[in-house]
Image 1 (cartoon, rainbow, N blue to C red):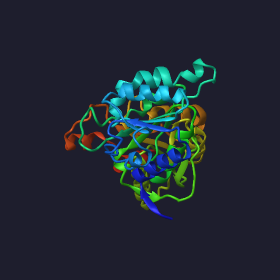
Image 2 (cartoon, rainbow, N blue to C red; image 1 turned 135 degrees about the horizontal axis):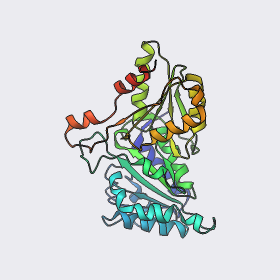
Image 3 (cartoon, rainbow, N blue to C red; image 1 turned 90 degrees about the horizontal axis):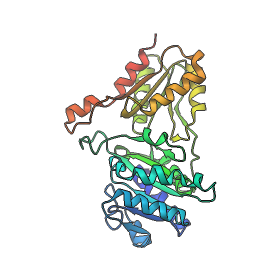
Image 4 (cartoon, rainbow, N blue to C red; image 1 turned 180 degrees about the vertical axis):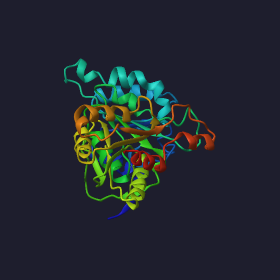
Length: 323
């Protein structure tokens, strides 16, 4: 099977869907001839033209707002924000419009909108260009949230997101764009709400999001050398969340560590921990442990930045903390 990068997989998935459905439109800043700030839309303008791959003003509210209008009028829209942090300017069209329109109209209106946003964490970009804000969107009924960790999932999930009649917040970590995985040539999609067990184990469950999945797998390898077999789970989507797979794993292992790049307080890890506590309390041998970013603004200083973010070593310490 061929091996391609995460960014190439996204590009390929979008391209295939645009060939399948001539109504699909891409909107964003520099997504046209330039091919996107991180190159994900490269070549789409050349194939589909400026009517379907539209460069927009530097106005995130307008980009997503136009996308909502196109979506409800029958033209599925893929909108790109250059950094996840800039979603603050587009919260009204996402949260108050896109997420609620199907409910307003009793299901008579579909909102096939994808809002792509990259997390640029651990790149020294500073506090306004590095945030992981996925927890905000899991709080909003009506939104679906996808967060792939590898090229295979990136392609399968973006295709599903584009076909989804509900709005999807699609979160990509920039550090994963160059990572490679085996991706088949043939058509495939990945169903939302289906977690993947990346590694089997009986001693502790590690749930990892996005770029922390490779770190969790690295930690699991090192733990195995010490006789601790960790089961690593990648949720792949946060809304819907496949809590059943996580709960069944915890019932087997009795221990849970959740890790993500977002700040610890109020992060998705807290929600996962609480749901597991509600459903599998009697199976837990100790409190759920979260390994996440510190509750501090993200510095452009690489030294301070490195001190803020979770690591494989932190996951290992968490797994060994259970008595």
